[in-house]
Image (cartoon, rainbow, N blue to C red; front, top):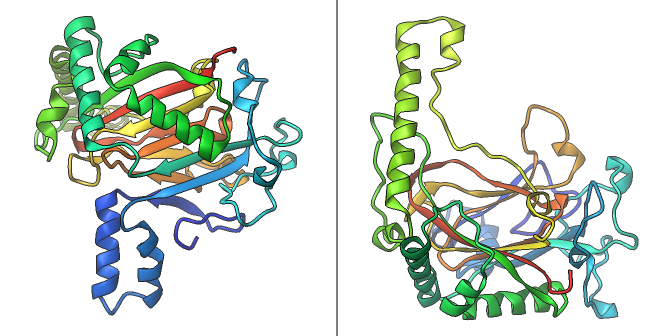
Length: 349
């Protein structure tokens, strides 16, 4: 697929959206390196300062969603997406006949998108300050989802305002949408080995650490360390297949889930990265969206079509909550990864 465009005939593979600093580096390399294709500079040039791209596809629900909000749009006639129109970036969905899954009729446009340069450094730091405030005053950990969105509105009101404006202007969501829950997720590598047993210091490590519950993290870390040390004992003391199955270190699994599967109120999801990926603050931990496409059905759990996204501070990733946007986070290798997640629904739903 040329650049970041995805059409119905795009080849097998997962389209990767790199961090902003990687995109900038790729563009500079394309200019300097005469061995790289002349087309490379033109491909990377539009993205050298970041990404602003949306993909539209038909909504997929195995059962009727509780939320009517996920199907409501405020399109003008000329803006209504047409799935046979190459001017829109289709996410390689399969047809209803291929999957025998009911969709809305006429088709409502569901979506996913990546947008840089909307959330500022100051706003990112305010979210991390909020994370520290919540831990100090409410406890909890990086997996806690808070329904008291007033906390978010009081500390960083500009972020929900910007995200709602983006959802309305780019994706035609109704004015009734509002945040219904949020989470400040601060994640660490979940695997342990004797050669790599500490967090690698990154550019923003100090500001990220303050948003974590150190007591709970230490308890979790020691548990994983004991678990993996115990399995290593089996692998070193026996060559039997039974013991070898226990010898692999525990890793953070990629569990694909749609937001509406987690809660009937999670009609839409937005996330704001609070850390830089690709080796700056952390490595690994890429966000993965899996296309609803026949090539992803069956097989050996291999994803043939989808989108993976690496983190950049302030980068916004958003999606509708149906099964057309099954997503997960891939395992981290080192560092600290942090995101602000906000879920949205209509006020009257």
